[in-house]
Length: 283
Ligand SMILES: Cc1ncc(COP(=O)(O)O)c(C=O)c1O
Image (cartoon, rainbow, N blue to C red):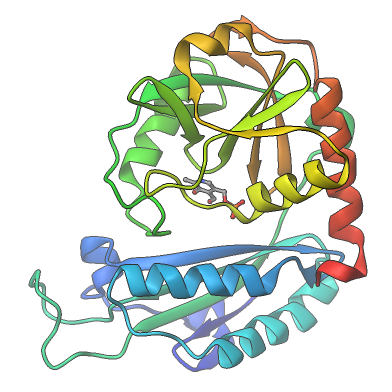
């Protein structure tokens, strides 16, 4: 596999980052993940725009969007041709400098890494069988809209879920279920799709945006409000959205079973999502 590192493509085995890198020492870095469907990136522009917002939020210098798009294009052309279903990962850190909390002065060049790896999607019937989630207190910071590699709270929440016999955890803040460890959180009740509005406490997911567009096209009513923890007991369907697999059905929340597989509204959106990612219009 080839990796792009600081201006050059190289074999993965040659790609080396300093032990002084601030991404490694402080989590002082931001990232993006882009899905390739049929060897082509989906919503690349939206991901690069979000990367720009994350960079600005972390007071990191902007990247050249055209240049980065060309790097993704290059990796996609070669690796994407061999592996049509893949993920492109982009990470930008504040660079390498002797460990000290303030920004390096004078500034050092950022560390920019991009790679493309195969994504192994489950077969649809297995995938639609859904996952189990548990709710956990949201003990993250107040800038969750920045896609930072500082993911320790997310990692701990995911592990908590695993130890509870579930696949993912949903963060609850002020009594509201707002998003999962690496996905946005949706419920369906009485035919209405509900998800938290974009605030500083969630990552504005690209897949979330696609689902909202699909719901509009399918004339499925949407409520942009966080879901109260006590209301979770009465919802009909739950699903998560993220770049990896688009719409991920949930069948159990905190042990309460919603169904044996994806519910009808989730299925409609899932089918529409699958059609959308394969359509040429969204490249
Ligand atoms: C915390 C969090 N929320 C939501 C998402 C979903 O965002 P997207 O649909 O852009 O992948 C992610 C993706 O990594 C995430 O980490």
